[in-house]
Image 1 (cartoon, rainbow, N blue to C red):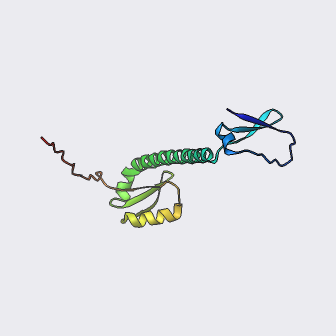
Image 2: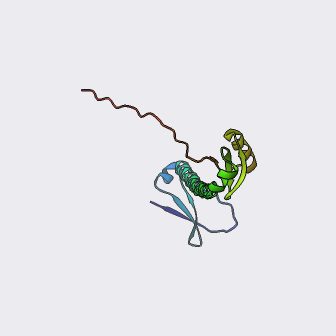
Image 3: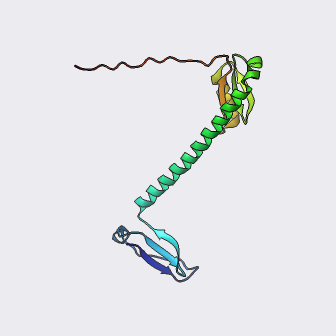
Length: 145
């Protein structure tokens, strides 16, 4: 059940006397001139809301980063024919669709790129004719008879 409290003075500080049992019944809505302006909820409910809000922000940022990474990969694939002539065997860093750095050592390249571009999306890939294929052994399933 929602309890409503009308705020009468617009600038006056308020002191509300609420105990946890009142909050257990539902939120307390504060109104000014008949319009809701705030809600008082239990701290546990607020913490759940805050955690949900942070997760939503993280998901949005993650989605944006994945989209940016796809765009940088597409740029790499578009540039690859020219890169095979100029950077074959090297790792290149692609940022905003352009090569911004290269190195034979991908870790050194990554360090420089991370220092220079901080949290921005940069695609790093080796320039080679064939994609590198890694073979991973599959676990065997054994049936007990």
